Every structure is written in structure tokens, then in C-alpha cells.
Figure 1: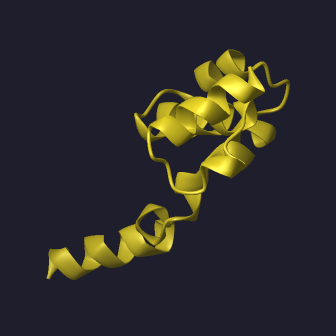
Figure 2: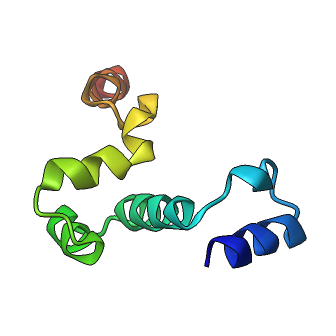
Length: 81
């Protein structure tokens, strides 16, 4: 599986294809499901995680400024005026 995924990454022209692994596809699947607004408990079940905190660790989108509650409040109050 590892060699196949790496070979497909190279064929697709993915930057840093040498770093792509089966775990990369797991990370991407979990992040994409959460970004698509799938409920955390469903993604947790999909990933086979016992603890939702582990599922959140895979969520790269949580690091985006626009997903920050402080940013959302600022936008809300900025538009309210």
C-alpha cells in the first residue's frame, strides 16, 4: 500500500510526493470530513478513535485563523455596526 500510494503521488505530480504515505491519506480524509461539516462523533467513528480529542488532532483546519472563535466574534461585531 505504501509503495502504491507513493507511486500515485508521484504520477499525480504532488509536491513532496516522497513524503506521502497511507497515513497522509488518513489525515486528509479526516480533515476533509471535518471541513465538510461532518459531525465530530461521526468522523471519530469513521477514524476508529476512542477519544474525540484524537480526531481533533487530525483536523488541520482548526489552525486556520478564520476558524478561530475570536476571529468570528470580531467579524460579527465588525459587521454589526
